[in-house]
Image 1 (tube, rainbow, N blue to C red):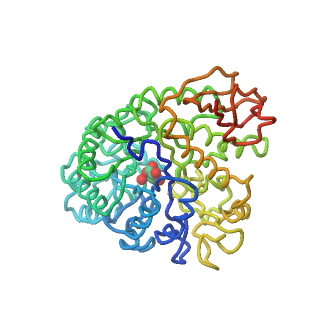
Image 2: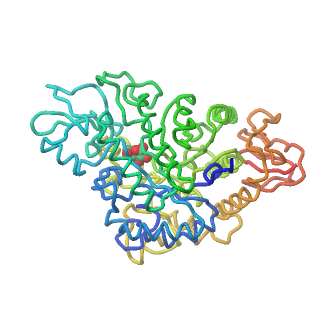
Image 3: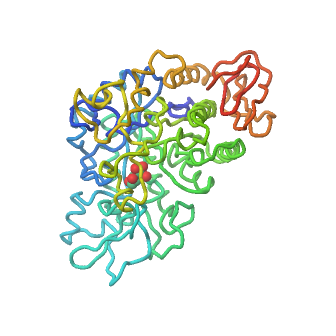
Length: 504
Ligand code: GLC
């Protein structure tokens, strides 16, 4: 079998609202992405994943979809989308779009009809004198809202995101049609939002724990796999290697593997990698679990829902977060499978912690009445240049939808381009190096003996070394160093918080 494009692809997540604003309203858009495709090509990624750009009242940044077959005017038009796909393909980039099947917006015509009493069976409505069960919204507060007439509807996220009833065949048919719509427009794949959702256990029993565990009445019902079998058939019926990657949150690698059986999804995100603490033992366990359970591994360090990894890895010693973030990238890019990057990590952007409360927009912040900061801190618009009202994110003089901190100027694309010590140039080197090597090394790894707190593994002639400990460790024997996340004294020692690729 020829190797499918997605198996080793480096996919770059574009949080559309925060990537680049061409229209001048302070919000990123499709035309802005189109203008920046040469940047992505030069960075060296294989594909882009676009977060939702569909018509939406933006109760959750667009993850509340009012029309699954359109483009919100905030982001452009369907013609802009088609032009973006055409340009991306011309530049050799694949395009993955988000599909949001667990819930719609409360402004979706189906939900508006449901409120009028028509077709309530497309959603999860219950009659009950009090809350129908104890389920909580992921964003805080009860997962139920009462409508005029007394019934309650279920929303596992914001009240503006009513959950579909996947036990209704009409919902199935509708989503197959939505997928067809975008496949006809040339998309190469889908990222499936809340892929372990969709079905809820019959009877909607109370739960003790609503975290994303494998076994729960709220998530991961067995019926969901039939949906992905049907979607796989549809994807396979289209020419080209169309694919799907699931956003599956679960605490069990065996459960995760169920989503990527040969007749289901092609990939699922490996959140265990993202959740692992800075520890060689923890990383090694995730690598072993992953390679033992899934046929096509993926690796991810950051996305639009989590604290940026530079900040997650930060300790009391200034500078460590970035050193570790660079080392984690070197390690991740050496592993077999595909890697998902999140916009701005190539600039070493930190989480922005001091966004003023009045500027925050994440429903997590709003629903928790400010108790939980939420996800705006990883969604701050990208700095492209080192001056101006939006640091080049928007046309001159326009302010971005979330304020950028002053330290973003020195981290901008303009400030880092051409500086060999910058994180951006390091990402470019790392991706180029991977591109060169990936075709010629085996798709398996072998562990090599290493000191405690370090990881050494090989893929054929490539050796990847990572030091998570506090002291430098000697490098294993090698011919030359091809990539390093930091300085290697005399090419002999691997300092703490550093990773490298060696050829033997
Ligand atoms: C996913 C998205 C997240 C969104 C949620 C509800 O987890 O990544 O941003 O809030 O689903 O759609």
